[in-house]
Length: 150
Image (cartoon, rainbow, N blue to C red; front, side):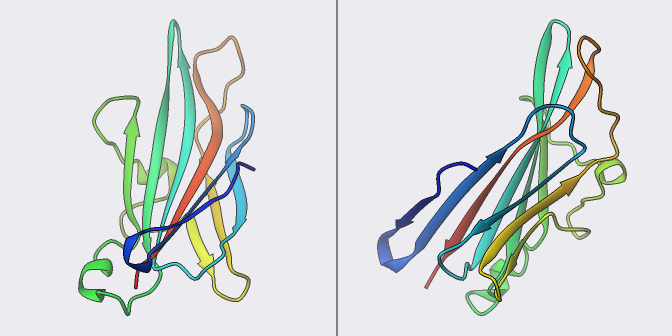
């Protein structure tokens, strides 16, 4: 686990972030984080690491979740499960067939109000290769951001 960061922003808003890393060779990543408050909005991100000689890149999936619909529901309701995927520095690409996540489909970041935990549970059906082969080396990293607005 990474180091949790909790800060209070202007106007009483709260902000929390934490990370989890694992080595190459995994088709999934599953991590839970103790959130010190009930968030209004969550952002979760996972990284798939690729190697194509002589370079490498990350494919990043970032998902936005609306947790509290009472605050400006007209705006926050529009972003639930919104997903951005970006390969390296290229154009964002969402592959819902391989990874099963889309703007309105499955979520990989969630909050449980009973336990106060944020969970990232992401898996892919991509082929995972081992060195020295080129290709996807697996899901290696995840990060969460939680926000509470008044």
